[in-house]
Image (tube, rainbow, N blue to C red; front, side):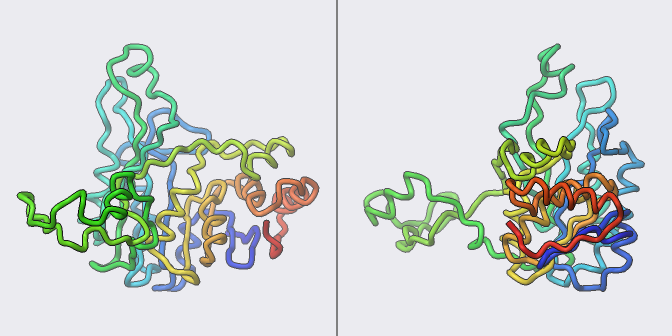
Length: 317
């Protein structure tokens, strides 16, 4: 385990995060948010397992995560779906992980989320494009695990814009509805049209993963460095960081990839720790903290990390 670079609020490590987790103090991390390599049948260049071996492998990390979480801490896990080999039948691995974490490891499922990526390309090709017997798989399951029954959370931090209908209701006060107890059991009171600054979001997160002109991608192109192939969009970790932590809290990503989580946490004034096994991906992730015009600086940081040096970056973009 080696420290690659540090910023004002964070530290990025190269190595197996199981080793890092063994050295983090208990009850010190408020949120672990991560997206591990999925249990896909086709081997990816960034590494993946499948089947029961995948569940056993991932549970090793989950066992080590639980002690380091604060009592009101959370563990958010993004998992993509998969098909069984040679058939248009879905794998249940992500649901088996859910059961394993809760029944065997003692986590609570605080809430299930579903991330819909509308910009995702149609897949799997065999069933969607060729035989045309399935629709494209564009939704990931995102399990929000907690250590206790009442993890820290405040949905006022992640309000979304009101619908046009709600905006009219707020303007017209009582013209668009009558306060009453509905057949569903919902008590629609006269205070229903209070402006709270936004609507409470649902557990369906519509976030396109279409990054194309970020500083990270700009610099990887300029330096002819291959960008990480499985980046998740900034809005995904941002939602959970804002929802489940406060400024000054600590956020950890144990499969950091290009360190989207660390960059978002820094921008939101949270302390952060990231860990990634692949040295080149860690070196490339430093570009998230460099101005897109600072190509020479980015090249130096990248080369220094590959050369084994520890970089300190305190003048962030």
